[in-house]
Length: 50
Image (cartoon, rainbow, N blue to C red; front, side, top):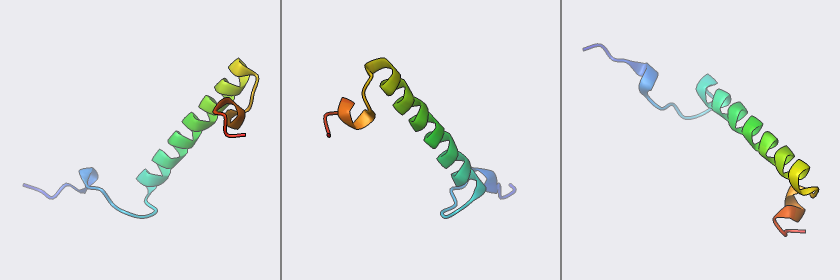
């Protein structure tokens, strides 16, 4: 059987890691924007940190 490297996890700055980093950053930004639009407060105020 052939060695298939597509399913192995590589540590460091790989293109797959950078793709996931970008995707999660976009989700976080949209979530923060949604909280701000719905509540009328910033995220830190919404969570009671400020």
